[in-house]
Image 1: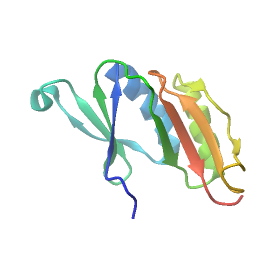
Image 2: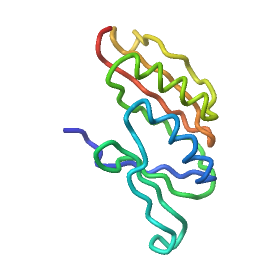
Image 3: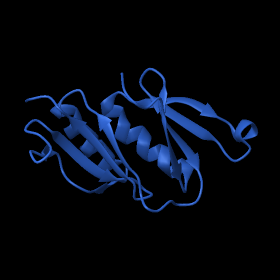
Image 4: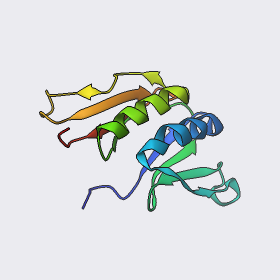
Length: 129
């Protein structure tokens, strides 16, 4: 059992952010599962991403600093590679290409991309090749 039920991330442009996350997260099997309209929240649409239930929520607001680092689970190294490629195609900025990060542990394979707000979004796999 993990320690988080869900995480919220504030983005400065919800449309731009959802375009990025739609593309970047698809290789990890993560997609938009729920959208709560501004008429309910009173401050703008809130978008929930996940595979079985919403676990990552995007909500509109001022650009936040310091930026957030989110590390997302990838089933295997190929999924990390696919995330990285898709995230760059969706407008992300390279912050560390796919590869081993043996300083974490011998099988830590990850890739890092900055989202449109500068948040460091990572996909990682802890399994051997």
